[in-house]
Length: 77
Length: 348
Image (cartoon, rainbow over all chains, first blue to last red; front, top):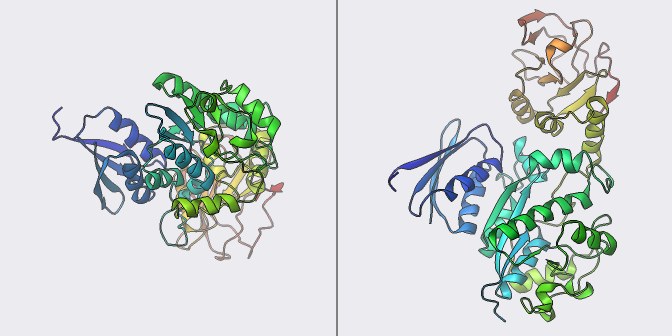
């Protein structure tokens, strides 16, 4: 897989911290520079994913709020 | 003093004590990885489940992740829910505290996991934010020694906040950590910790009030004990999730109902309707009520089931039964508690 492909991580229907755990576990397998998109419906991702990124040094790219879910983008550092 | 190459794992709840402990290790040049164990019994997670916001109108946050962000310490969340319930909550070797909190077994369980990670990834020791005498069950001298022993971390478990009143550990004896820079905090007061937080410029930490786990909560404990009495140890994760919300009423040995207390609890209960009976007042803002068992095992009828806690009195109900499809029935609502509900025990 090239670095341009966005890796999709499904966490809808799960409650925090499960979305963070899925992000953390999936990112472990990616190479630096690759981007992941987390799909989640727990509002906790709004505050926890940015904090997790600061803590781990990964790059928080932003979040899109949709009516029934969040799309959260993170680039592995 | 810089300890290049020394690596330690810290148990991080995100409270002030574990945050300070991690910072003290950082100050000594130790490379720190914070481990945050997700047990399924976290107070903040419970708030978020039911859609509560904090007083700044933001979602409740995971304090460990925010402590990690503040310290620039990586924090890894370790999901232990699956084993934690049967091995720790349901069968604690060292018993429970004031609620259903198996604090000693909990520490042992987490520290064993930490030891496993320490060995697998080449860390040198483990530390915690425990303070001697701070908690009545797990933070007295004898249980602290027992915890270290049973976790298999003899000499490799450092408690930086109380280190000077505890026997020197291997990290201190080997010079990985300078004992003189550690502390001798004892007791329940948080004054010293708050002063240290000021000194270190740590301003963003949760107020120390009751801890981060709701197993000591007496209301929750009553519901969990009831579940164990009626279900034995065959409790599944959904049962545990449902204990966290709503008002619970025991109707019989095999029947319990759960009533949502507000819209966000109703929304939460909605997710668990599959395979359960559910009752609500159509077209009115009514509580959603779930029956706890598979409808096939429950003999409920309009004459022996009614739901309290609704302002919509004497309205027609739609009684839905998943196995048979929608079944409209007429029910009489009392203004508060129904006269037809054979409640054996109100659990919350």
